[in-house]
Image (cartoon, rainbow, N blue to C red; front, side, top):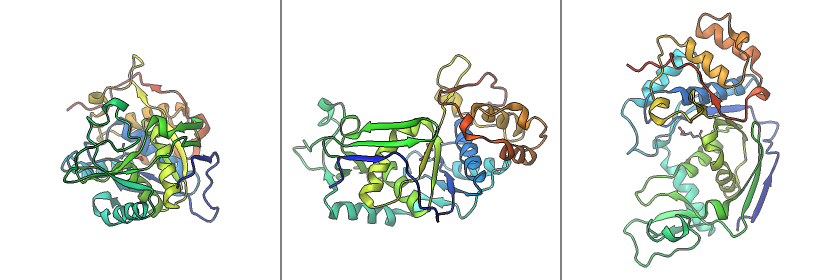
Length: 311
Ligand code: GLU
């Protein structure tokens, strides 16, 4: 069974592993401001350590995929001067890896088949603690068993010490959905390990998935990478950037304004990159001046939206 309490305050990958970061967009639309922040933050964090930066298209959920979005995201990254290392990996081609991980967990009694419906779990606010289904579904879901008292502690390079009672806040969580899709949590853990990722740098909206991912890593005997969650972007009124605004495509014909804004959201000094007139120059100045300890813990408010191309 998984230990009830997992303490990984200082998840240090073995010294021999090369530093490898990644950007893992879901192909649900064009590259937008929030995704540029994650792309740039993860790129700079890996590169200032002399590391590699890999790209993974998270297209497990074919129903949410927008045709052509992955290609357009790759093109936008190139416009912003963000060149990745290695081959681009697509989750839709990695079912065998996810299945092997699930089979392993099932064989060891750490995962189980679940026929519960949303209705069955309504009384426990959607959390699963025990199967309540009275009828079998044609296609079940699969969940990781989370033992009572299960608590995960970890260190986030920006947010500091983090702790989650996974049993109370999450419950037994889905690894494969009843509709046959692989859950994000399983795919991301299997892929981060298979790709030798040592640094996970992404938006703070995913911070509360981290405990689940560490739990799964422990269950599968996989290493835990370092974690760094970037501040969410707020609009000029201090509200979370609305989905529609955050999802507006970026103007790639002039990459500089968006790069400058994202640099500001990362808490870095504007003067350090002020001399750059094109993305290549900008990135080399950014690399020479990026200081992760300046990244703010609190969400970053943006006061200028002119870089967004609403066309
Ligand atoms: N695919 C996720 C997203 O686009 C990111 C996953 C991750 O970085 O772990 O929000």
